[in-house]
Image (cartoon, rainbow, N blue to C red; front, side, top):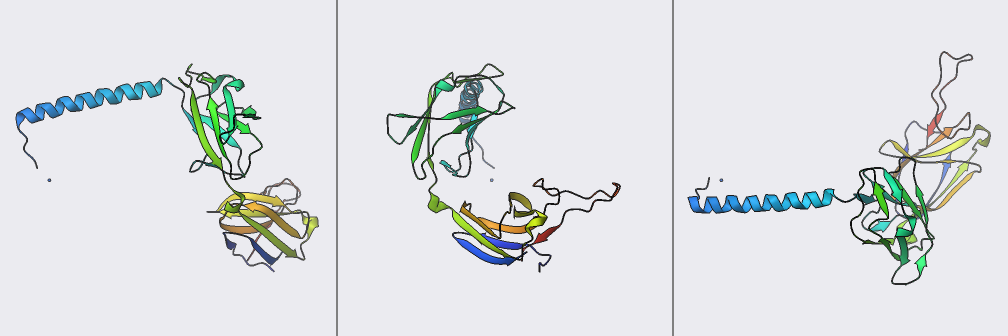
Length: 239
């Protein structure tokens, strides 16, 4: 039996459950001096902005200087990359001199660059970027060599989840769906009456079961005009 409300679960560590399917007057001389000073500040600011606009802009998906174990490290560029030298990206662990193996993949938009490596939980890393490792569609490069330091999160920063289902009809292709703020963040097709994930991001979630009639892994709306008419796929909240 399921109610119409979703179950909200605050996941902080290991969790398991059994569930069913002012005015101021200034002297003239001071005023003139202040104006001149402001002009110098403005000029310096413009020069700084110009220098920044003359080099490629890069962001990462790091959070607080840490890489999420459940994510793939990535660089994000504000413009498409036209030239990429993978040898200009060097990965090192801690203070070790030995270069680590890394796989590099540029997505179809050419604005996101993924780096794959055998990350060690809790370890510190540094990425050395050569100034000309990448050039964007405006012809801009990094301008100078740079180093990015970060850590990989430890497994202790995650929780684990185990859920045992009773009387779950696996023939209906059940999918366990996880929500945050009404948005789907994870979905797992179920092949057994027990669900287990060793590493799960702590947070507050709502969970539900989707009976995936056509086994495509997503919820499908019905079609009133089809023959025969197709009903929307059933989603049952877990209370």
